[in-house]
Image (cartoon, rainbow, N blue to C red; front, top):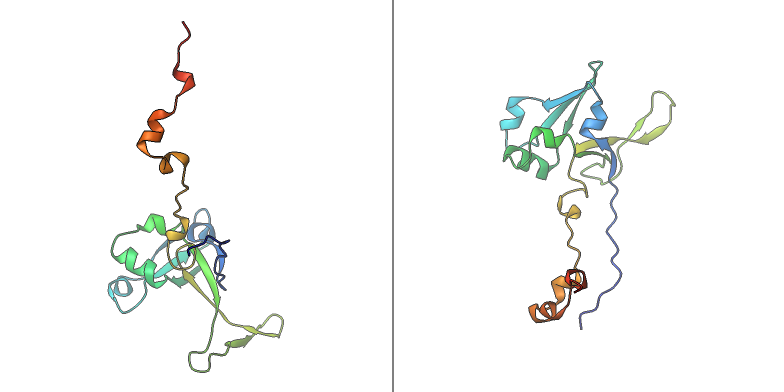
Length: 155
């Protein structure tokens, strides 16, 4: 028998460092890094992020964002509201974390990678939700029987 239970959302190791617009800040800008990259369907779209001082970084989009951006399902302006995610880099063969030495502290730490994605880590459906109201469940006959007392006029 079908039973409702408490929903536990899946957890992920994705950590957002803010949206594209927040990251470049006021006076900063962002654009596709190159026309060649944008037109190469075998690659993810990369975005050049530039702050107001001219410091820049190239960040790839996630696969779904790349497909939607090329297909004009999202605009460059809308891309600014998407989060930049930080993920630990893992060796594809050994499946072990890729480590590096931090030049400031001299300590070994895990190397990180960044990408632009949809909130929820892969789709924008996490923001869609329908809350069922009483009117959605009642039949037309039940709704017709209800009296709206505020509509009655005293004589």
